[in-house]
Image (cartoon, rainbow, N blue to C red; front, side):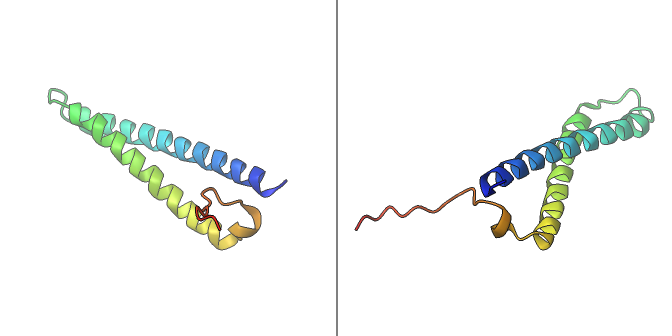
Length: 94
């Protein structure tokens, strides 16, 4: 495989990982919210909970992705295996 294929596979894998972590953390946080907050205070307004849980799951996903990415960069030489996604192009013509 060449660098472009490796880069594409890495981006696809990272995207799938990020989505899965977000979904799993959302489900876990929602179950905890239902178990402890809604069960404890059944007649209160709980509309803020879904928004907070959604934001927290995105934050957890982002932090998890960053930690895994930093770990992988220490183990893998990115320049050797991956093609740069954003390339600086010279706009000057001689």
